[in-house]
Length: 220
Ligand code: DER
Image (cartoon, rainbow, N blue to C red):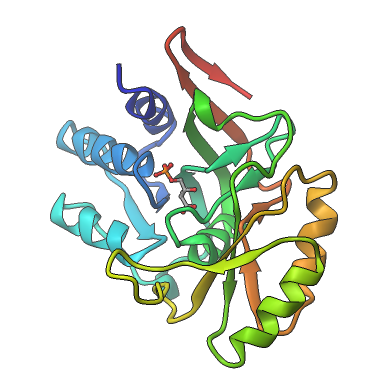
């Protein structure tokens, strides 16, 4: 059973006619974008904004109308994945390299619906290396400051070994902090470092987390 699709299909049911929808990024959000396109074939009328070039391209290929941000006052619902979620619905995101655009869109969304398979639900965040978006200028100095917070930051590489660049032209440092006891505190410490654009901790942003498991669907 495709647990990611199971969660995505449940989330797509929440979309109503006339909504402005935020399209997430990653392999779970992929199924939500397909689900929206399927519902549009049955008459659903929506407009969308995307959280990455990849999701923008997929949406356009499927005929989902993407609108420019100057036409958007508020986003009614955003559906997105996560790399980890704890029981408080605090998230680690950024595994797909899209955390900055995702957080900008999430912060302007009435509802942020997170869709995951059961493997993403953890007691405490941090097993997944925390992605941090950093500017290229003097990146070595920024990495040193990240390390001082208690991690071993590694710049993400592409398959051919070159430095991965986000859609915004920045680098992603994957930072293994181990178990994170104070996600909100760490979020603020990270974003206080000059050179850090944002990080993958999404604190108290999710409205709902829909979990797909072999036993069916559950909601945090
Ligand atoms: O990059 C991201 O934030 C993605 O949403 C990621 O967190 C989840 O990706 P997945 O659905 O492919 O596991």
